[in-house]
Amino acid sequence: MNRDALQSALSQDGSIPARAALAELEASADFQVFLNQTASAQQLWDIWSWRHEVMLETGVTPRPGLAEAITGLRAAGTARVYMATVTGSQRRFILVLSEDLTQCVACW
Image 1: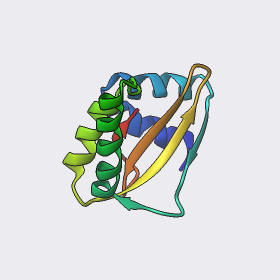
Image 2: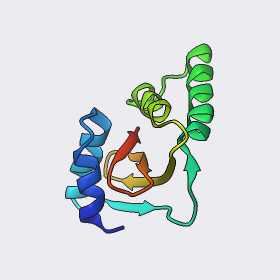
Image 3: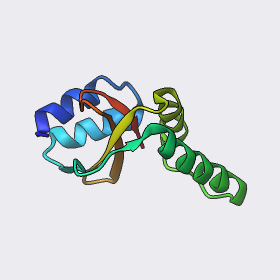
């Protein structure tokens, strides 16, 4: 996946973290898409919704956008997805991309 394709996928997601990740990409941030394996969005939802719940119960502030990302993962159901990262000057973003790599399912 090239930078332009990732920017296109992120541009379709109006969330604050996705817009911030897109801005970092446009400013030449490093990125990596893990194409060697997929997971179901349901599996990632199971993991991240539990982590989010534990964070809230223990007083840890979740990363911006995590709650919205969990909603996106749930909406994607059992669809196969890819993980990616964008490492910008301010922070590292975690992205979940659709199986065809054209849409950002979740970003935090």
